[in-house]
Image (cartoon, rainbow, N blue to C red; front, side, top):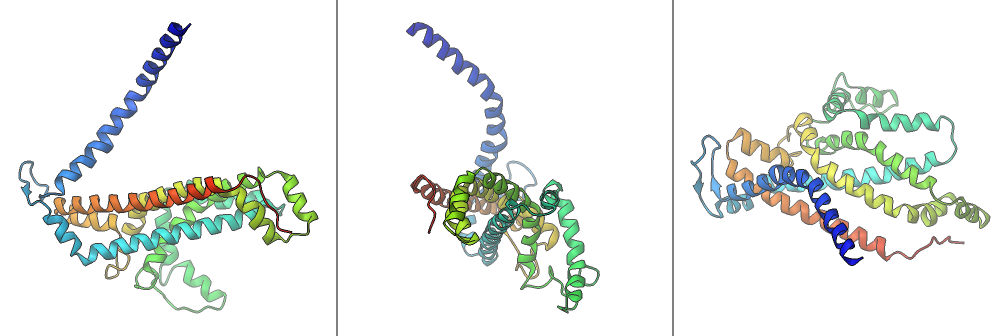
Length: 309
């Protein structure tokens, strides 16, 4: 019997290996190899024109990097945009998901409206918001003037005080609908007996949300944050590059756009590689810390849901 189990286990491992091998090969070619290549280039000065023309300079790129004010500004903007997108997306999604969980008229229509932007491509979203933000022809300034807020022809993407946040709002508009649907599905899985008990105890809507709905949504919020962290860093280049190009005066510059400028426009591939490596380490550390904090809170929660009387 034990011999049969060993044979079955051995065949199982072989089958798993056969299925995993193609994905592993693709991962090694398109992820690990480029990462190792970037790590090597970060110690060289190379203009990217011909192979073999690299000049080894050791930690020279990293020394220049830490004295580069644009890099630090781009890193700060990255963190500001990262926090802004995550906080607004989670809070907004929780608010609208909770509102839609109650039986309201045209609830299905509202869900479709919120989910629609998620089906659009990033370039399409950028094009829509370029039109909305236009100083003279844009709908945003026109709408504000209709409701009595006459701001004039504000260039939302062209002034230092609004460019960065204005570039982050389209990201929220595109992806928040997905998290609304995700949270709404989780709310609908909450046992009705919990909600009925809270009504019998005379709890308000806020108490119901804080003591019943929110604790039940913590696993879903953790999953949503994983997607948000990925989306915030993976699409930031598209939105900043096509909306503001890092301007004005670098006030909306981010790491991906600055790395692109240094590497592909200024032909400093070694310096761009050092920035990519430092950016990867910083972003990885932040993501790991956030996820460990969330998971520790999630695992440390007591089972069950408490209702405050």
